[in-house]
Image (cartoon, rainbow, N blue to C red; front, side, top):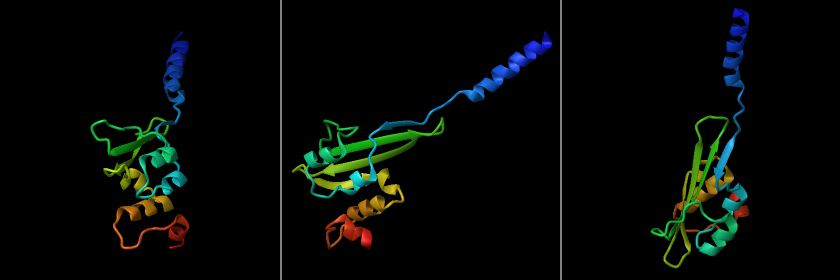
Length: 131
C-alpha cells in the first residue's frame, strides 16, 4: 500500500513539470520590412495601410498611435515592445519612438536615424543599407 501511495505522490509531483506551456504572442506583430517603410511625412491613412490599426488610439491624444506587442516564451517574463508614432496637426507622421527601435537590426538603425534631425533627408532604404 505504501508503495502505491509513494508512486502516486511521485507521479503527481512530476506531472507539474510535464504541463505544456506554449509561447504567447499578443498585440500588433510588426515585421521589419513593414516598419522600414515608415517615412516622416506619411499620412495617417498611409501608416494605417502599412501597419494596420494601432493597439492604442486614444481619443484624448489623436496625434499619437501606439503599436504594442508582447511575447512570452513558455512561461517566462513577457518581452514588451512598443512603437509610438506621433502625427502633426495635418495628420502627417512627425516622430517615431519606442522599443521596436532597440532591436539590433537594419530597420532599428534606420528608424533611430530618422529620429535624429539631419541636414540631408533619407531618400530610400537601399541607399541607407549601403552606408
